[in-house]
Length: 162
Image (cartoon, rainbow, N blue to C red):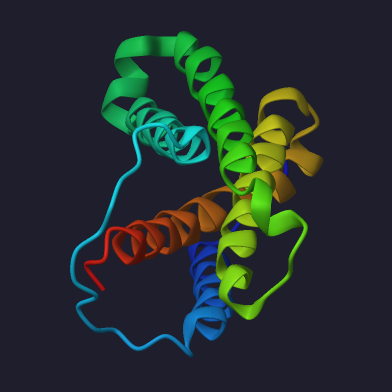
């Protein structure tokens, strides 16, 4: 049986991912931006909101206490929610794929983290060889932690809080 990834490895990987994100947003000062506007007919922002809600629901389903209550069924809910959240995030980020400006780098990085999270989750779910599954596990938890913090920052910036 292969050993599980060490907590220090996961912590260092999370920190490294967050440092990359911080370097992408370092040119933005943290100041109150004022009011924000919301266009209820903007389908792409609704896709982002739906993706964020699905991601939050996936996080809730992945909480250990709820996992126990759902028994083996938690993965049947958690994994599709993560993949759907990534798909909605990709629709939300549709304009950033054609124009690469420094202001979009952090958003594209968040999308890449979501993609890596979905791929590593699928690897954990479907790879049955314990030796290979430990590599997916090494990535899944740190990417999830870094994504949560980066996504929180992204939402706060878009809501004009910072």
